[in-house]
Length: 419
Image (tube, one colour):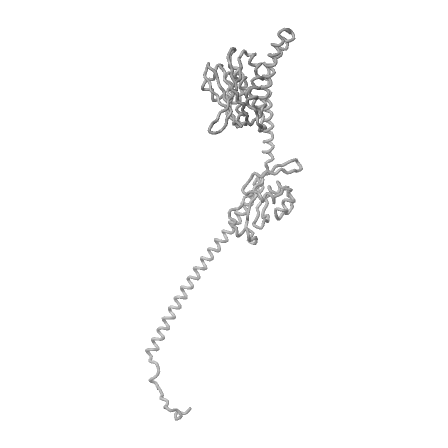
């Protein structure tokens, strides 16, 4: 376009419109300063990169060493587990068997069989592991008896939940975290030892029973032999000798019952029993023994007809033991009184049987030991009768007590819950 075509003519700026050299110098100076800052920043960045690279290399080296140490520890732990004297079985959250050590394979007789889960393990080992899972955890007392080529074998199997397993890991099987560890122990030797100890205890108990019976029946048998000879040689006084013979037989019966009670077990069958009739029958049963010893034996019930929950034969045995004990410690001419009465104690109906004698009494320092099995005040008996009484009273829910004064006599009290 020509200058003449413009409404306003173009004004040529000319040299005066160009920037001054000072401005250019300032701009160039600022550029130099900015470049210096960039170079410094770049150098700092390079130093940081080098430092980070050094730290990363150190951490990579440390991680490599840690992984190597973990591998060494894993190998060492695996060796320890493989050499353990008990079987070890590890499961993950998917109920997959992660590991079985050699002892576990031997105990379960797996051989080279590959088992992946508890169902396969149950099929091969013939042990229902799935039912054990349903039981309580953290137990080592699941005892299993299995048949093997050499006979029966006992295993103690228990499992323990690993504490690092979370509920979310149990729900998500993809994590495959370890869930539980099972411990298997061969307890065949201890079971056999237990059976041998039980057999030894049985043999010892049998020996004790035999010794006690031999000691207790020797004298009555000798007396019975004597009375049998007197019956044959002296028919005139046969009734007297027969009475003594009957007393000896009843003593033998009581001795056998005591031995069986002290060495026996189990709970007796209880039913409603007329205690008055039972106690009176016991007194009548032992009357010939009292007559033979020259002791006056009497019974008094005061007209009370009391019923208790008990075993009639055992109740009669208690009365027999107490009266025989009184006869042994009461001189000829003394008395033994068996009495029975009912009473109310703290709102409960009770039945009380007392056996009181005028014998030599029991020293106060021995009174607490009279119910111990094997203890005898004079040392002339095996000391079973009173121990049997206490055991039988406990089985009847009753209580036996004793009070005594030396040279004055002794009183035993039997207290029963009355019906």
